Length: 313
Image 1 (cartoon, rainbow, N blue to C red):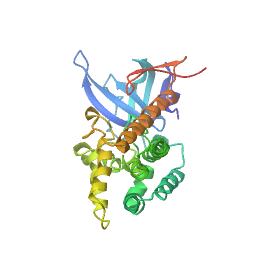
Image 2 (cartoon, rainbow, N blue to C red; image 1 turned 180 degrees about the horizontal axis):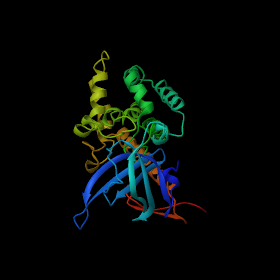
Image 3 (spheres, one colour; image 1 turned 135 degrees about the vertical axis):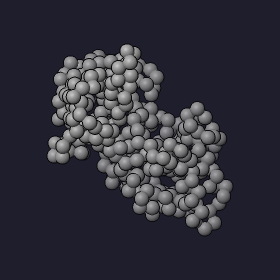
Image 4 (tube, rainbow, N blue to C red; image 1 turned 60 degrees about the vertical axis):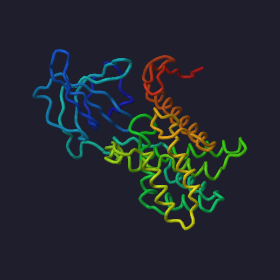
């Protein structure tokens, strides 16, 4: 098969892809057309079906479909104009070709994360992490398999664990650079800051917002998980619970980015910076990896709101 990141302008493609989304829209002339998002393990591709004729068979979102079309570049992004579609049949495709996944070993990453838990000195903080990450089999299994986002960064199988470990490593480094930073609290919050995404996003290949994801969001869900776990630990200090929950509530940094609170402690601010850095650097890395243009500049990146240049010196 031809993976999405291998496609080039002008190429005629006949192949199987996962239909990630399907919209029926109207052109300026009032003519109906389909706007699709196609997915394989290398990324997403915008697809357009301008002629809704007998060559376009019935299909739905999250179906595997066989398409026939031509690749073009529109607004500096690849797009495929599709002439024919039918649903794929069993045996015509391997589902694992359509599930993007981390290049890193999830078992090793989880082992490293648990290793950080074992370095925690505060007994209540350690018990909280054990309760949520180690003893809860639902969390530990989903942490290895979940994405960290739908599309923006770490949007692949194992992405949540990869992002969580990266933020924890950054926070561990930062904890020794400044006085008055409580390392135990900072690392605890790094490990738990996105834990609510396990319930905010569904599993692959769907990887869409759940009802709780739409209604509550991962920040609230994570804070609630911390409260529930703390309530099971005898004598867990209320002040400690509030400090930890504050870091979760504030880790997006600004109200307009979804944080109910601004970071008001050193730990909360360091966590916000670490999370923001890992997410944005990863987004740039993914944009460069998926780029097929010639030259140093890969074009405008929507998440970063700027043109991105490869450092090919």
